[in-house]
Each structure stands twice: as C-alpha cells, then as structure tokens.
Image 1 (cartoon, one colour):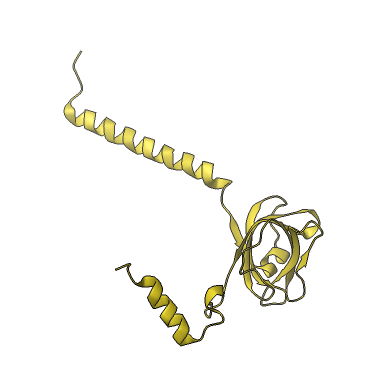
Image 2 (cartoon, rainbow, N blue to C red):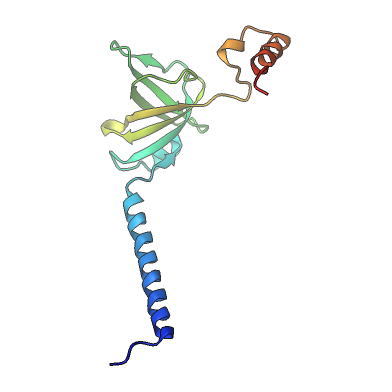
Length: 156
C-alpha cells in the first residue's frame, strides 16, 4: 500500500486544524452563553424585562429619598431611575461602595426577582467629573497641590 503524498498530508492536517478551531470556538461560545450579563436601563427593564433569575446589569441614578437601610444594617433598598422617569426598586445586601449616595450614578449587577424587585449582588458607584478624594475635600486648590507634590517626592 502506498503512503499518502506530502501534499495530501498537509491538506488533511489543515482540514483537521480548521475543524478543531471551529469546534473550540463553538465550545467556548456555548460555555460563555450563560455567563453573559446584559445591561438594562430602568425603562428597558420595565418595557422588556429579562427572565426572572437571569444575570443582568441595571444602570441609572439612585433616586433621591429612596435609600433605606434595613434593621440588620447591611440590607439596602433603593430605586434606580432613568432619564425617562422610569423607576426600578432594588435590594442589596452587603457593604455599599463609599461613593454610593442618593442622586449618584450606579450600576447594579444581579437579577430580577419575583415581584419586579431587582436583587443586586454587587454595586458599582459612579462619581461625577468633579470627584475629589475624601482626604482633599476640605483643602483649597493650593493645599491639595502641595500635598500631592509632597507625596510624589522620592518616587522619581
């Protein structure tokens, strides 16, 4: 029996490599299918809600006057609002970020629970473009620049 020609061996190897590459891509896509986290604005969530229990992100502004802390001290309830006036109630148990306050931007990662309440597992607080670290809030611009200069001396 004759051995395959080198040209045919290369062709078979290229075809096998392509099949393996496509198979790996399909396997990765299937594995990541359930890990995708869609982003919703409050209006979108109310108009076309995700399935109960599906991992999603909800982004908007924390409604003024809606932030309440439960008796346990770690459970927060608040509402996330959109530009269109839509409102989604949220419940979060855990330690909130320092920048999380009423009127600030927030992205809540979690899932829609029964009754239309969004159950957040994680909160990402956003700050505005005028953010100033807590340590520098009471300083004027000259004092803050001087402190920044003192902290960078010796790093060069």
